Amino acid sequence: MKTIFCKTILALSIFVSIFSEAQQTVTVWGIAKDSINNFISIVVNDTLQKFREKASRDEGFAKKYQSEFDALVNNKDFHTIPDSGGNYTINAKLTDTLYFRRFKFATQKYKVGDIIAKKTEVFLKPAPCKKLKQCEHKQPDKLYIFVGKKLNVSHIDTSTYCENIWDSAYRAEYKIIQQYSDYYPDSNIVFTAYDHNSTYEYQFQNYETVLIFVGEFCNELIHLKYQFFPVYKTKNGRWASPVKPHDELYYKDWKCNTIEPEKINFDKSVYFEIQRQKGLTDQQQKGYSEQQFPKKYYEVKKEKAVPIMGRYAEDLIRLWKECRTTKAD
Image 1: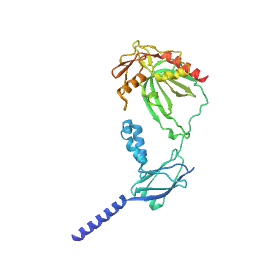
Image 2: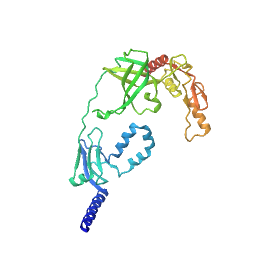
Image 3: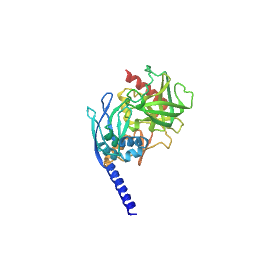
Image 4: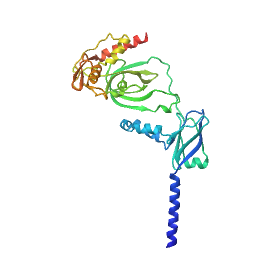
C-alpha cells in the first residue's frame, strides 16, 4: 500500500512539474519572412484578430471594450514584428500559439513549444486571391434613381481580392418604393457600395429610407459613391429630405444652390433628438443646437428638432444633377 502511495505521489509530482513548466513564460527567438520581406504581425493566441472579428460583428462590444483593445495593442507581451532580417523575439508560454499574419498572405500558426523544439522558421506565402472584374465605363450604362427601404447591408471581405481596396465594401439589398429614372424591373435590388471613412451621417446604410443613385457598370450594380439623400414621408404622401445646414454650404460653394428649400409638412413621426454634447455649458449647448438646427429650417421643441423646410425627391434629383454638372466644369 505504501509503495502504491509513493508511486502516486511521484506521478503527481511529475505531472505538476510538467504542468508548471508548460505554464512558465519563456522568451522565443525565431525567424519569420515572406516573399517580399515586408510587415508581418506575430500575435500570441491571435488575441488582436479575435477582438477585431467580434468587434466587426458587434458594435456595442467594440465601444465597450475599446480601451482594453488599445491596451492590448500597446502591450508588447502579446504581439511583435520581425526586424528587416526576419528576426523576432517575444515572451510566451510553451502552451501558447503564435499566429503569423500579413495582409493578403496565408496565416500560419505554431505552438511555442514546437517552435523552440524544432527551431521552426516561418515563411509566409501569398494567399489565393480573385481578381476584380474590370470595367472601363466611366459613366453607367443605366442609372437607377429610387427611394429605397433598407432590407440588409453587410460588409464584403475585400481581403480575398488580389488588388488592394482601400475602401470599405458593402452588399446592400433594398426594397424599391418609388423610381425616378431608368426602370428597374424587380421590387428589390441588390448592389455593391464603397465608402472611405465617412462619418456616421454620410453613410447611407444608417438610414431606413434613402433617395439613392445606383449605376449599372458592365452588368454590375454599383452605388455611385456617397450619392444619396435620407428621405422621410410628408403629410401629402411624398418623399422629402430635411435641410442639412452643412450641406447648404457645399451647394453654395459648388454654385448649385438655385433649387431652394421650401416649406414642407413632414409626417409627425419625423423629428431629430438634440443630443447633449459633453463638456459644453448651457449657453454653448444652445449655440450648438441652433447651428445644427437653425430656426429657419427647424422648429425646436424641448430636446426635439422638427423639420419645417426641405426639398422633395424630384427637386433633390434636379439639385444632384446640377451639382454634378457645376463640379465637372
